[in-house]
Image (cartoon, rainbow, N blue to C red; front, side, top):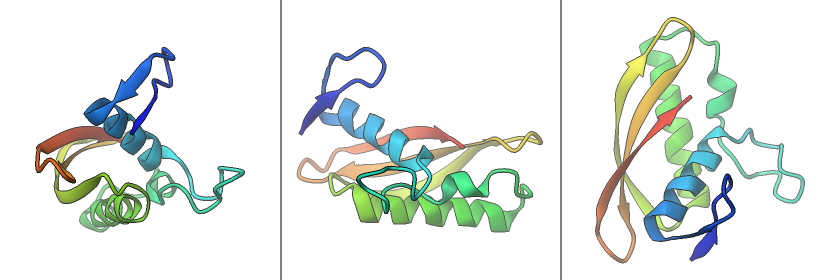
Amino acid sequence: MAGMDRHTGRRLEGWDHIRQSLGVLFTTRIGTRVERRSYGSSAPELQDRPANSETVLDHFVAIAQAIDDFEPRVTLQGFRIIDANEDGRATIEVHVTEVGSTVDRSLEVTL
């Protein structure tokens, strides 16, 4: 599947397109897309919650559910917290496998 880079307009294919799609998916609030109200993740709703283990788990669940619901090109393998700071920002490394190629990939998501 090919698409367009949301910043430059150039053509994207393969992992570059998947990575961009996942980033958009994780940061889109459910209900904000006019033609696709169910699209998105509950992760943006978790901002400003206490940085504790419960909130981290909720982020993991939100990301896993979004991948399962909307990104059939990858299979989730796991997560790792890279950084969480007092201003409410967290960076999570998401590990996935591309379906069909069995290539393991990872991307960082800042929420």
